[in-house]
Image (cartoon, rainbow, N blue to C red; front, side, top):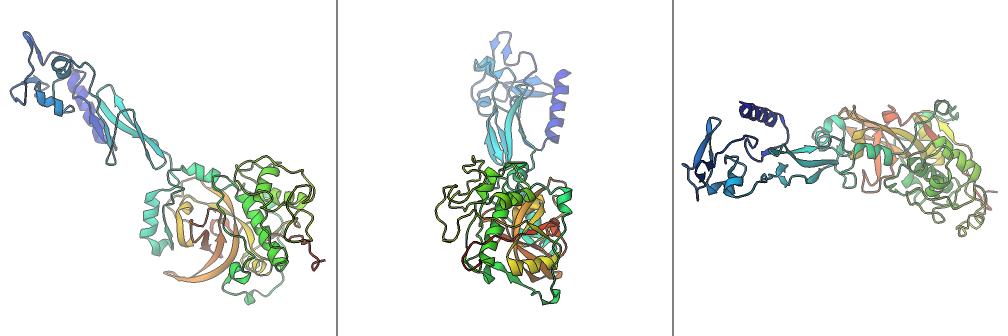
Length: 440
């Protein structure tokens, strides 16, 4: 009776399990002599259907054919009696057309799957249940419904096999602004909004002045990278090419450590305050490594005390510094600010599907609303309009920091005028302090 209950339980488990279960020996825990008779073992050579014994309303076999069908209907004592092998025959698991040996593991995206042997009777593969940074179902759904979503998705090799929590922690890195920072008064700009063009691109307006796309790596450094990129762009634009420089994000990562967490994230207001008070060196002096390097400079001083090479601008002796950062209030103000001073810094809320963005005008979907989100800092460099299935769609052109192979050569477009992903909520600009004979 016990053996029948055990088999029924096994059948129920097998029917419920998503992964395949391979039985090692049917009813291996049943006791009794089947191949062993009163006169000795009865083990038949070859395949002999008559070489069988009744077991639980069916038959089990004691012939040599069992050697080629170890997980089928051989008698429980066949191997110990006929083959002098008391150890159980260990089966493998099959998972997604792969054979996995017992106690071995394989990776399925970001999850580890292990083949386990239960009660020396059946093998089952069990997988971790982490949410992965790249989810094929999300990619397929977005691409199949382009008319609805307006953008395309793809699988990025460097993101595949990573957990979503790793992406939030190490591919973003901006701490949500404090309430009092969010309440900072925006600058008042006086202009005629009807004079603003429908399209604008900083790269085309100021060729050679705008910072290129960088890959932040697995370091939550968007707070530092976006800060120095915006400042670098504005040094070139406002100086009219007299100070074209790439500033050091590593300087902020390593030296701005009061209330900041380097590759584990930082606040934009604190980054700008450090920049304003102590200044930064250029990237050639302290190249970006995307790690928590020890700060090699005194907290304050000039380029000479920082032991940097003489910059291209012969008039530059001080570290690069900026005025206090100012907030830009709304859609048209952001456009005016970019046109007259260069790209601006924006903080956006990142949803899970954004990591898979390939092209088009991004708007977050309802496919991953239950997943964690995080905050990311980026550069808005322009805007435009595009005809879509739903009519004319306005967009921002935004520079990301995930490398040129991501998105549209490192950029992405996002719905404009509707505060998509909160990208229009906290936008900052800054005025660089130029050092040149002509600017004096």
